[in-house]
Length: 486
Image: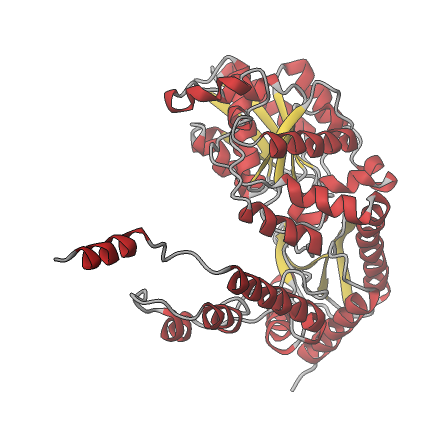
């Protein structure tokens, strides 16, 4: 081998096949932005959902990874054409199912910027600027919910991680990690059952308590369950309250639950994943009165605060309860001693490697201001109240529970139908399927004490009254057709 050939081989070994030229990077980013802006502009003209069966998608996507490079522009276009459209368009103005949202453009760009800066927000040494900004945004949340200055918290992937972090803190703060029991409403999110199991609570010690006629936790059942469990030698460590139950938007009796938990020495966690940001409005703050007395609160900014996923958060009344539960010395991180007297977010939750989630909230609020956010949150409650009034006046529709925090639960049931719940369930299921396939809107359902209910969750800032009204009119029309004999 001559010297020139050796040099070529050395240069090839040193070359970086994963880099792009600056112009190519800009062209690709520009095209990605164009695709997203075009999508946003055309969204209302499309349906809220698109999807395909696995067999069909496998034909398009199941393939071995390429050995050689492909033009990046072609890869981008293929993703935009063959992958990303096949999903529920959560930001569609008629996406009324589950808990939809509509992220702000500054929030989207914040995720792009944070990824481009390769931020790992694990410790102060590794990310001091991002860590300080997370402290700022968490303090905003603290003020909005009415927590004291001793409070703090962190961003999480979402409500599931927030509830898990909260239950770990509750277990460690209890002093009784063995034979633990936890309590929640039969309306509570499944994430809390999963979190309790993960921290070691046996399934039979996870108490799902009955809710009342308004789907709020029954306090007598809670007191009875706690007394019975203590008599049996169990250690109640946490009670979970709903501040916007996912099915109905119901708010548990937060003040009474706080009184009970304080008297009993039990950690109170409030699930405010979607409902908590109503606290930025006066109406919402009044509805959520008592939430500020909880030991911990879970909130998702990727729901009613209009951010891209993932933007969950956990707040605790005393931030040291998180640090006592999660701070662990690790030799590989010994160099972070530089920031030992600063907040290290890896000491507050289950993640070490963490994305920079607070930036999107900060950029969005800085861009639009809080007045715009308060108006957007209020708009969701107003549209839900108008939808309730429409349903109550309709000869075809029936409300199943009062509106709460943007959620509307109703069904097709003309006053003179004479049909039982089972027959009505079949009619409403058939009608829901018709909306799914034949209408631009996307609507979900729930079960309310055995009654099949159609459910709107109206918290998307792009949704208008026309979107809600026309969807209700479609349901009325489909309902009449389903009830009319052939």
